[in-house]
Length: 286
Image 1 (cartoon, rainbow, N blue to C red):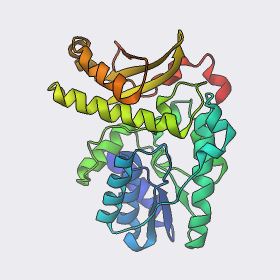
Image 2: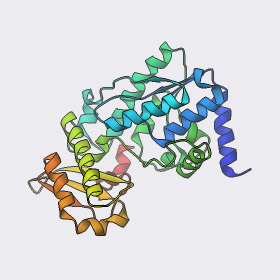
Image 3: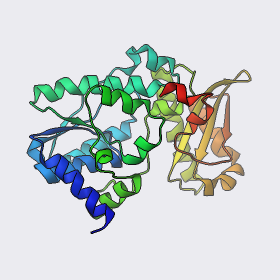
């Protein structure tokens, strides 16, 4: 047996012992694999998927999440969360994710209880835990939610491999963090800013397609006021940076669609969690 086989066996053993489980399903590959593994272990009737609806979740992600849950035959709860009612989330310091995850688990736990389910689980994997700077993980753990992938030792690569092995439609889906992750720390989060980021990324994908370019990963980062100008930074796959640098009309379309004063291209390309690079002292937010 391979290491992946051993880890999937451990995942199955953890899940099969449960009378039922509610999976916090964001629509991404990590929580999608947890959901699929739970169905394999328990059967669809003992598994509930829960996708939180809020301004931080793009509309396309909601549609895709509903389709995936439907394909597995599980009950799909779609409660509304209100992160924007939490001052720590709106303030958008380095610990913003703590308040977001706290809101999520606080909303999902009563739903699970109403359905007679004791276990609420997330899609956190072993690499996430080792990354160190994950205030959201702390918030979930403090509220009793746990992470089957991390407990079984499944890494990001393991999760992708499992998704391919099980022929899940989201196996190759790019990482899709919430829209708030695009807003620079210290710039207050609002429904309007979240909607603007979504508009900007939709415009960017359209402009890239019109230019004959296809990006797997892209982000439009809202940097707030930089030298007095409302500024956004575009990140695309590193292999596209040189090409995009010569296509100013693409960035202009993003600027015009979303109402930024200035849209800049990041020469380093897409990097997951790049906003954390701007934190002066991440350790104090753990």
